Amino acid sequence: MAEQLDERELQQQEDLPFTPAPSRSGQTVLITGATSGLGAEFARQLAGQGHHLVITGRNPLHLVAKAQSLEAQYGINVETLTSDLTTDDGVDVVAARLRSRDQPITMLVNNAGSGLSTEFHESEASDELSLLRVHVQAPMLLSHTAIQAFLARGGGRIINVSSVAGLIPDGSYGAAKAWSINFSRWANTRYKPEGVTVTALCPGPVRTEFHHRAGIDTTKKPKWAWMDADDVVREGLTAAAEGRSVCIPSRRYRSLMTAARFSPDAVLERFSRSEPKVKKGQ
View 1: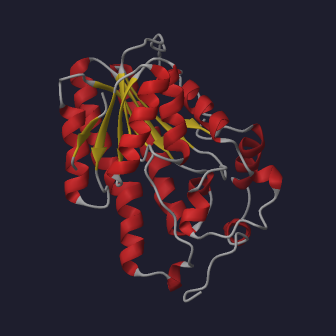
View 2: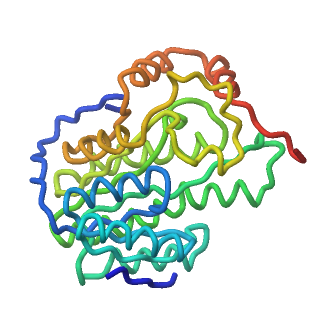
View 3: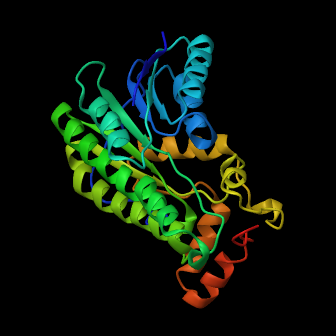
């Protein structure tokens, strides 16, 4: 029954030894921001593999509806946590579940996120701070809790949903995702020998509600630039099972990011600005 509770390198393949854990049903996975977008697709695919879920979000009605749908379709158990990850209390709710030994979490998917539609100099400082809280502070605190718990239990996996924006100069959003990528690379190298893997999933633009909800105009973005959520999640789960630090789920974007490493920052920054922003007051 759904239970409501409140609140390498571009294609890096490390030399450290690692044997992927076998796929087993009945494990419990915690997914933040799981009612829409990539989070909902993670929930769908993991439920399809037989895993029980803990899903988080800010809207309790959406959470319960999603939980009931997943339980009915896949016959798994789904627990819900209402939490706003821009707040300390919201993070504490999720961290407490990660520490719990009752139906212990074996995988954490740090997926919750949001974007800003304005240029940095036109945005409100409070909005910029909220972006950093949900993209940096919350994943760092939840990863800290999860790694402690996973080490004590003998292993576990973390997927940090990042972006190719973190590999190029792309505003405060790209800077936040750059933290996610670099943290994942370090943490995976440090903890993989002890059975805990950390993978940064770095897609390009994905066909989800993300851009629309952030008010970002995507009408000029070419069709080739878009990725499908099911492909992104499938490749991300495979990369995590293989113990990779970074996954760019597209040969096209892997090639682009390789080229970006040798391009001047001025060129890359101008490219990142090619996505139209909404002027303040519009």
